[in-house]
Length: 330
Image (cartoon, rainbow, N blue to C red; front, side, top):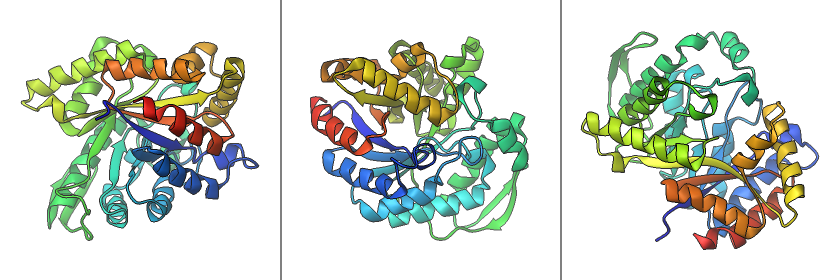
């Protein structure tokens, strides 16, 4: 059995940034190609105003209707604190039913540095949510969603939401409920150790898995170590938590071409201007041997799921090439 599973990240922002090259129909086709090619899961991004794109759960519902076995997830649901937890629970339960239990809900709080692109402050302001309280809102939302998925009637007296005799039907297909992973991604912003530990403690306490990005293999390994420590403190088996990396790939013999394509793609996607260091560390680029070596570094650091986004406008060709030349090596 492979030590790692690979996911395919669909560029659901692509039709907005490359409208003549990436279409909504292509997104669904890519999911079908990915499933046939051996990808274990299919993912879409999420944002409302900060980084506009085709709405995540709607795209996943379309993908669910055209696939049979791949897991389906949002990597990550950056709008999670902006969505009412009852509606999120309801929407996701329906998606889980439609897909016959193939969903993974990956929550995150949105935000981050300006360098990472997107005006999250304006997004939160327009949706009436206090940006500074998004971490607490996220925790409360997860608590409510878990309750609605597993209980017939929910009474909840929270700081942000209050429920009285709340019910939810349909319940999810998965029992007792779909997994909820949590994004904690502190490393790129060089915060103090206490802040890193606070985010990873949250993963250990309330999540079924960890997803992160823009990290080195060493940072990924360090994060897993912190999560293990925090989980053991509360008597939770750290081995029950999934370990996931959000990553990019451009499989191309001409490494300079791969770099240029990746930079153009990511700069447009995030509405920013990434430096060479970010591109080179965030993308497995170059020939087959170089891409495999880069991915192996993360597998050796402990990654069990690696989601791959193709940093090119030639999405179909790249998905087929990665499926044929990269996946069999793992």
